[in-house]
Amino acid sequence: MRTQVAIIGAGPSGLLLGQLLHKAGIDNIIVERQSGEYVLGRIRAGILEQITTDLLREVGVGQRLDAEGTVHHSIELVFAGTRHAIDVHGLTNGKVVTAYGQTELTRDLMEARSAAALPTVYEAANVEVLGYDGNNPKVRYQKDGQTHEIECDFIAGCDGFHGVCRASVPKGAITEFEKVYPFGWLGVLADVPPVSPHAIVYANSERGFALCSMRSPTRSRYYVQCPLDDKVEDWSDQRFWDELRLRLDPEMASRVITGPTIEKSIAPLRSFVAEPMRFGRMFLAGDAAHIVPPTGAKGLNLAASDVKYLSGAFIEYYQEKSSAGIDTYSERCLRRVWKAERFSWWLTSLMHRFPDTAGFGQKIQEAELDYVVNSESMSRSLAENYVGLPLNFGAR
Image (spheres, rainbow, N blue to C red):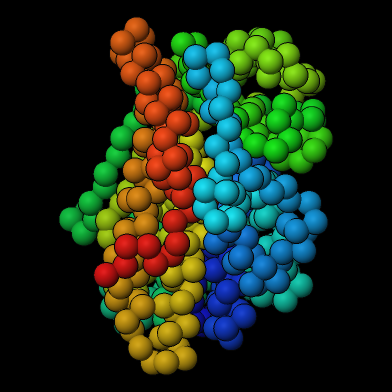
């Protein structure tokens, strides 16, 4: 087989890249080691920046997003037992974020790809990326007991943190930066009305962090900070709801509607960046190159901006015979990545209970939060980062 761009990974970044390239008339094949059902079964966050929603509309999959997504104009910060609103919409000249589950976004992209009859290989075993440091890259995999090979011009590594693309880069050619946080998030999904239909709620308490968000008017996503060695089995539904209430202000706690959880999991938190994001004719995008703590809702949105840069670079290469976008891809992405890493680290550090946070540390967090909500410039900085910085922010 031959194609122009071989995309490894059928998650949101790979599917979105495929649609952008297809719209520009650039051939692409997606190779995914899991089944389509497995990919759809992954429950992930779903707070979308304007850049991400614009891209989805650009590739023609914005109909259900516009019909079912919930626009958020503000966020609420809870600390010292009180709640404070940050008018994100007003502080950013009308920008918003939209709640739309990653599972639904992935489904929309899958269905669009299927409707266009674009080639996607699921359940590809032993995927290898070869020759990307030369002029003839190849992707080799096994399927149904046979070995297959795809010749291509470029390889796009959209295969996640544990994927084959970054793992195939020689150790000396890549630098990895990582920070591991000493706690996790216990997250639940429940078919109950959200505690706040208009905002995402971040809570700092002496018991630890909590977050309340909505997926729809009848489905909510809640999180509480927990020790890394906790097990899901340790947390009954009743224990979770009781703990969540204890971390909110009293008025909001009284409005929490409980019900059976339909998904419950514990996720560790880490910050991770791999540099560079280009290796010859192979390019990393999304979680293959960087991980952010979910506190800032940046993971999926960073993947979308990577894909926007990468699709533009490929379009420029094929339509204008220019390699300028390809040559600057890594630099442009990393400039944005590190700003998102900084924001996610800052918000994580501000809202969570750390081993040394008790007492003095807790009071320092509360003092900074008080400054954030009472200083227009600090509130604006939070809002600007939350809705997503412009793609060309800080460009030189």
